[in-house]
Image: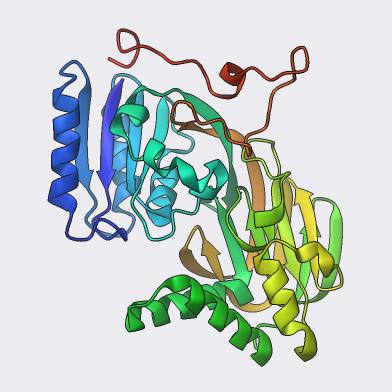
Length: 335
């Protein structure tokens, strides 16, 4: 196995720290001289995808790719590896949001920020969502939430303040303005719905808002979750948004609906903003499809996520080594 470390110098916690991280990587692997490794510092947007393809094509054996960055960096790495043989992905969270951590529990940050854990732990096969020629690991937001994300991010960067309050403020403002209400034709598996909507939240993992309270979400169950948001009357905006952000969307079935599906098509009457794992695109026709088990993802040892699909129980108990594959020693395939 060879180890490819990708560093995104623009990631939230990396700016100005590239040399320190590079030295940390070199120091770790110097203790294991039989481990073959490389370091690549991304130079521009989408540089990562092309570099990974070239690297893997020239590799003689399994490649474990490490994403040093946040959700956007992970998005680029995944779009570079999905579909390639003999590739695994590890994530060293160094972004502003680190959305995927919510799936494994925010208290697992230290486990992911350990090169020893990431280099020696086994993988689990998890799902991705295909949209066009792009692959999503966490979520896609469309309409009102995408606009709130864009405007909130810009305000936070300009004012040098935390992003979350800016997202919420933008969400209230644009919901009040009703500027994102459009007519959509939505095909959810075989069910067709045509109506006015404010937006959609498509998720494969626990991230935020509506799905924060959904204990049934699994990142490897062969489905993704869809939340549709209809226009909200002025007098109910505050209550609905507050409950939505706390995962209490079920209190408002007239405005927010939840579906679990494998395929989804959304046709808009106009071009709309779409955020795919934090990356903004503009589309009028979108098609999503689950790709079951399409990514081999390194899950640090001793993390048994509640949001992984559990195997059948044995004698009333689930064996931990059936959730996270057993430890593979340094003497074997990791060298």
